[in-house]
Length: 180
Image (cartoon, rainbow, N blue to C red; front, top):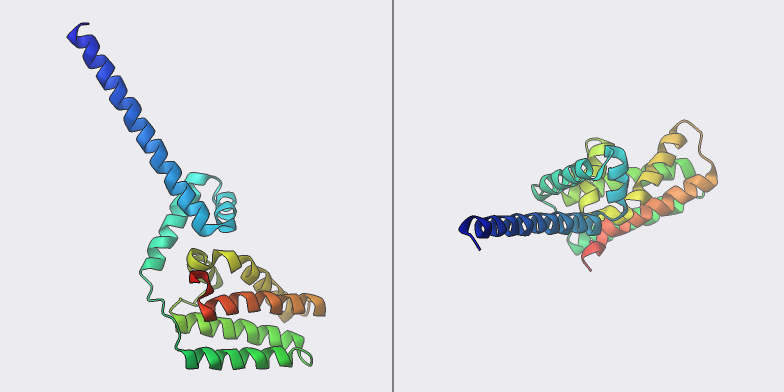
């Protein structure tokens, strides 16, 4: 076998190994993002029009989230929030629309105290998606009902559903359940 043939075979083998390594790395990154973001991964693929753009967005969310100072609440603050939540739920019977607005405000305060930015609904979704992707659809549903409720366009059953959705995110944020 000539030297040039041997070199060509080696170069071809190196190219194949490099291409295989890159493919495996990209698949591992994609799997990481799918696992971490769950249904939010598919939603972002749909919004961005493809996996590559979605993955860039999700990695950017992770980087922004890593710069946040997210903290767990002391037991006393968790009890206070729990008491406030109980009051909001009790008020639902007499004022369903007001209770949904209060639930939204309580969740926003909890997010803020934990260290999440709360300026803008889209920004809240982006930051929450990194560690709370499993309850993000709850938040979206609750927020949608709250917005429609402000215009008087939500039924009592929808308002009840919104409270259930807010409770899911509230509980996860309060207990830091995702790490248990």
